Image (cartoon, rainbow, N blue to C red; front, side, top):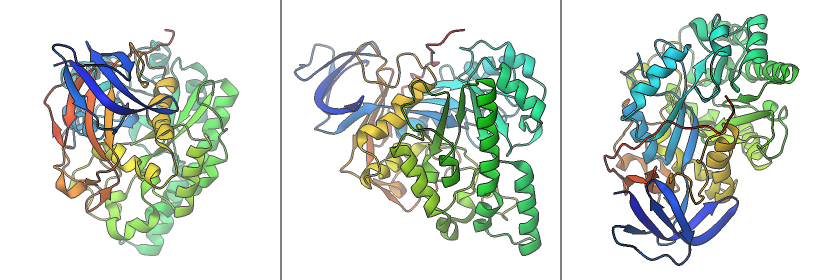
Length: 446
């Protein structure tokens, strides 16, 4: 069934909330009008005044395929994503093998076809020796070029100045960076070992993956981008100091943009006491003051996007000693319910949340016909019930890893329904079994 009439919706779109109906036909939004009636062959869903909005476009996920599929895979994690209100995602290159060639990109697209419930694209990863491959990449072959400026292993760690300069100067793709300074982290870790021995507490992660490590690397990325005129997007920023480096204003026309992630907007370092290594992630979750700064930066448009950095690990990979515990959290299944805490606490309005989760990702990554509720656009929609909390423990875990850092919590809203390309994929806590995900298209020059 691909013909729907969503009646009595409170449509959140392009800075407004309006009461209207939405007709979906052949995967696209055919009509937006307040006086639509059901046609033959059409299924009507009464929104009953609930919010309907464009689905979240998650610009940062790790779905672990190929090579790490004991943790997750494209099929399992995309199912979890639509449950959380994510209708499109962009997946990172740190798989096994890493995605550092066009052949590797083609392999990932092949794996996703027919198996991804949400729409998809993939990053090309920069390595120590693949500059020519980067330069030869068509601007529509990948969503962007991922550069690990610290916090990685093997060839994906780029720390030589001449290699970084070449990437920033010659990449035909937007450069997207993970910014943490490795020498600073290594010094901090040595100091922690000297202080604690083998019993480093989880709280020390915020000291090891420190403010200085983030600020130094982010400052370098911005300097390189300005020197070479590079389009730059900085991922998962975490500190108040970094916020001061970015300009305020609308995302359209910006050379440099920034992103914050749901877990850094939700948790603070005090949560390490209860959750320990379960919330160990890179960059680290930091202080309440840093969280306030991130939230302010969203309000004043210094920060442009909200993402998840979904990174599933098996529970036994998270529960050992600090040094042995893997870094990363499964987050997509509760993405919009957790992000709605920003609305519930009046940090953002629904309109501004949609801007950060749907409109701005579509603009920044130049996605074609996505991210807005417009006639003729693909029908990637989410219905949010703000009057019904998500009781996390009452839901089955859809991510393959089988756990969530939100266990025991009640999130302030529920994803009542999700449509991808006009297909209903999630409704009232259940997957429908439809797998309609498509390769994302771009409105950019080759």
